[in-house]
Image (cartoon, rainbow, N blue to C red; front, top):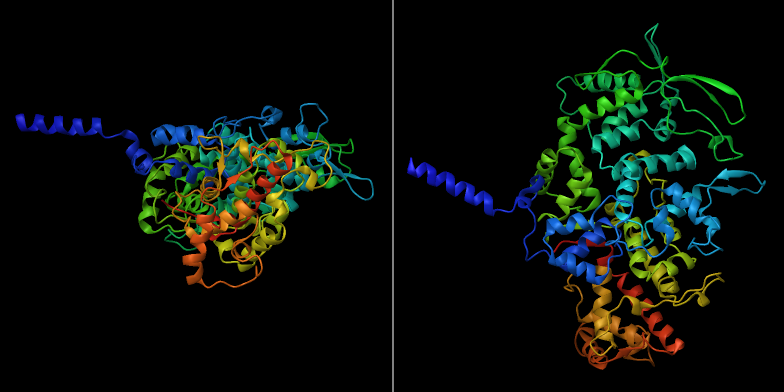
Length: 624
C-alpha cells in the first residue's frame, strides 16, 4: 500500500514539473538552448514574409518562453503591433483587401500612397474603348502592398494566400476580380475568427468564386425525375484537393468514383449566382456577385431586369450517401458544411492534410518520423484550429531542426527580400518598384496559380528550375538599383519624395558610429536569418568591399585589373584576409550631416544587399 502511494506521488510530481506546452498538440517544444533570436527570425522568415519586428522586439521574444512568444508572433488579427508596428492610416483599413483597395486608391489626406501611384489600387480601370472594368491587376497590386506594409499583419495574409492560391486554388481569369476578392476576404475573415479548418474549407467550397470557376454553378437536379444535369469536376476535387482523399482506403475500388464523387456532384446543385452591377462595371462578366443565395428567389440584374433563380428547387432535396455516411441538408451550403466534417475526419485526410500544410509552409525534407509527429499533432488538435496547429509546429523541435530545409518559391523569396529591404512605409509607398514584375518573370503571379486548381509554384519547383536562379541573378547584377536606390531622386518623379535611411534600423556602436564589420554582420543576420554560421571569411570579404568601397571584391583586390580571375586557394588565404584587415576599422557615414555622404553609404548597403540576396542561402531556409 505504501509503495502504491509513493508511485502515485512520484507520478504526479513528474506531471507537475513537466511543462504542459512540451507536449502541446503532439509536438515537442524546443528547449531553452535552441530558443533564441535565430529561432525567432526563422519563424518570421518562414511564416510572415520576414515581418517588421524591431531588433529589440525579436530579442524580447527570444527571452520569453517559446509558448508565450509564439502567441504574440503569430496571430490572425488584422493588426499585430509587435510584429508589424503601425506607421500610418493603413492599419485603420486592414480588415480585408476591398477596404484597403478603396482606401489606397482614394484622395483622402491620410492616404500614404503617392498620388502618382494611387490609381494602381482602384477597383475599376478603363480600357482603350473608355469602358470601365474591375481590375485584376489592381487587386494583385493591393495584395502585394498589404503583405509589405507596416501596420498590417502579414501572417494571416500568407495563410489566406496558401488557402486560396494553393489549397483551394482557382484562377482569377475564371472568376474575375470581384469574386476572387470576395473569396479571399471571406477566407481572411474566417481565419480571423479562428474557425475550424474544416469550416473554412466548407465556406470556400460554398463560395461563388469556386462555383463559377469549376462550372457547377449550372449543376441542377430534377427531384421529380431523379435526373442530374451538370459536371462532377469540383465533386472530385472537393475530396482530392481540399481534403486529400484519393479513395485509396476503399475495399470496393468503384465506390469512391461511382458513389462518393457522383453523389457529391448531386450535392453541388442549386448554386447559381445572382448578377448585379454593384461596382458600376461596363463589362457584364463582372456582374456575378457573392455570396450565393441558396433559396428560390428573384433578383434585379445589371440591366434592371427581374430574374428568378430556383436554387432550392434545383437542389437535390434528399440525403446522399457520401464516404459511407448519410449527408443531409436543405441546400448545397448545408450539405457541404456537413460533408466537410465527415471528409475532414476521414482516415486519408487526417494522414495527408496536415503533412501537406507543413510541407507548404516550412519543410521540404519531411521523413516518416516528422510526418508521424505532424499527423499525431493534427489528431490531437481540437477543434481543428489552423492557428493553434501552426503555432505549435513553429516552436517544435522538428521545425527547429538541422534537418529542416525549405526551398523558397519566387513569392516567398522576393517578398522576404523586399520587406527586409524597405526601411519604412514612406519608402514602401513612394518608390515605384515592387517585386511583382520579378515574381512574374520567375513564374509566380498572385491569384493566377501556375498549375491552376493544383496550386501555385512551390519551393521545390523553384529550386529545380535553373531559369529562376538565372533571372534572379540577372536582376541583382544588372538592376542593382532595385535594391540599392537611396532616394526618389534616382527614379521617376514622385509627389512624395523619399530618402533611404538605414540608420533608422541598423544599430550604431557605443560611440555612435557604424563600423563596416558590424553592418555586414547585421545585414547578414537580417536577410539570411541564421546565426552567422554561413557568414564565412569569403562572404565577409565580398560584403566589406561593397560597404567600404562600393566595389566588388575583384575590383577591391586589383583596381587596375578588376576582371582578373582569382583561384579559390588564392582567395581563401591572402586576398580575403587582406580585405578583412583593411576594413577592420572602416566606418560608414550613415549618420552624416552631408547628404551626399549619407546617400553614398545607403547606396553601398544596397550593393551589399544585392550580394547577400543572391547567395544560395536566400533560396532556401534551413534548420538550426
